Image 1 (cartoon, rainbow, N blue to C red):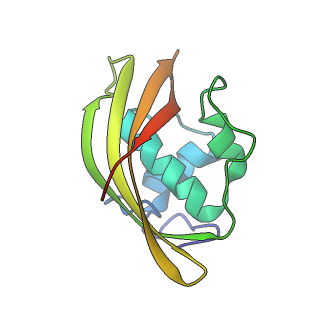
Image 2: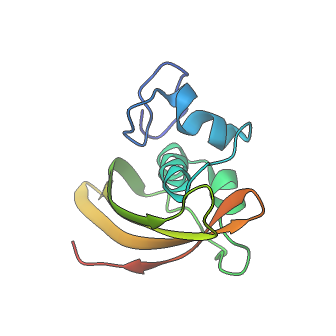
Length: 134
């Protein structure tokens, strides 16, 4: 599902192995916290793909969250997690390197970034990212 709500038994928008209800769905709905930085990265991708601006803002560290967090002209097409460091249950920080395919005005694009996450109590938050070459 791209650009709308997913149903519980559909494959997850992030491309993970679990269906929506066992992956990003509960995290975006606020009924579960992302257990790892990678899980938050996947949920943030799903939020972008489904237009869930409220979740994107809620999962972004307040010190670095910009006024505009959604680019409505982008259609998100797929996520590939390339590497992770830290970001597990006992960690305070972590990074996730990813590539996300998108389309804008009919033209394909690729966003590659090393995202930095930090734990705020039990919640993982996106802090910032370093753009990388494809």
